[in-house]
Image: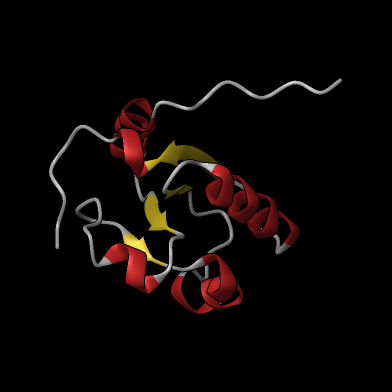
Length: 104
């Protein structure tokens, strides 16, 4: 038997991001998915291009908040970033439950 983790509230996660100095918000969805809209201020860094994080985010102590569509890829991105040496990464869930405006 396995247990599913509770779904993260992206809106709470965004509040935490906004309250964290020098934090970066990344959208790990594909570029095509982002055409439907992104959270303002986020950087598109698709899961399959995560290796380029060191170019975009050279300081591995930078707080990173990640989101995707439903939360699964953001969770995987955080695990990969931590393996790459990033020390302060968190998944905030999926944009599917986001209640704010989107930038297209």
